[in-house]
Image 1 (cartoon, rainbow, N blue to C red):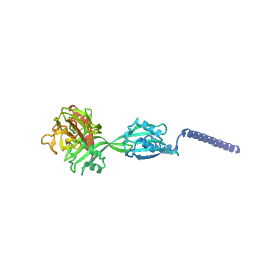
Image 2 (cartoon, helix red, strand yellow):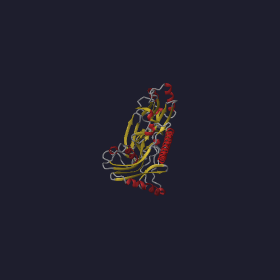
Image 3 (spheres, one colour):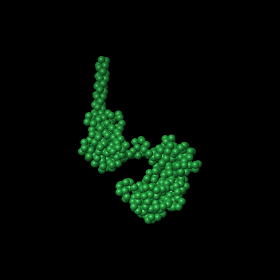
Image 4 (tube, rainbow, N blue to C red):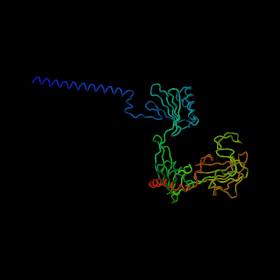
Length: 418
């Protein structure tokens, strides 16, 4: 009996020893594996998300953000940040190879990334030129620069509103980007008088809102719109025809009318649109925000589109001039006239192709020519850069395809409530 007890105790002891050996082996394996897999791994990386901007790890730097001050350039910014002149020169040279540093704008943001050690070394400089475009200069060693583009994310959205005062104010009241007012005025420029909106006019829009880093930056494509003006609903659908995107109604008719290509029948361009042109009389460089057409004195000048005469008179530089407002977006101007057609006056409606003046050489002019100008939303633009959309309707052979293409947009627009 005693012998049996000893045997049982021995067996139990052996089992305990084996279990201990197994656990010890497992512990060594786990420890060894931990060592293998822990090489180069920071606990912060395991337990915290890595925050980056412009492909720079933020945890590694103290970031100073500021705005570009007036009369500051890249060299002065880098110099003020503590860089030595030779590094400033190299960095400026490398930056100019990828970005026009003359276009750095006062008021735009820039960031300085200093190391968190005792040296507080400047490793990166980033200038934000626009919500999507930036200049990044690496200064940790030999300076180099890149021009970067942030990705734009488009999010499909819809909006609606009822006009209470101005369209701009209505957008703000409904928490819609106010630029939507400009976009709608361009789409409906030929069919809605946006200076004569009435209380109760309303709109619905299906569009893309654009985001960069989850921050809204503006309006992308507009796919469909409905604008009810004085009780009449006007529908607009974006569609590509002849390689140009334009807006058509539910029957495939274009919402816009095309301008004449030029306000003169027989002429040549003697001077183009320029931000810096040597003035032939003043002998100084100054912007020329129009297109000059050389033509004999007395040549008829035609209004490029339907509109209303909003100004007529004489100016020291422009000489005799006339301005025609075509809609809420476009206005055209005609300078250096010799005379006007009989009876034309401010407030008069004119048709596309109607004579509004005759070529002359009044004002600051060295010879007979027409100085032709176009304003878009109140700002002078290059008349030759305006891309007139197709005014012809959807081609008959394409009409069925067009109706199929806009069918889903119709349904989507109908689901938008006021």
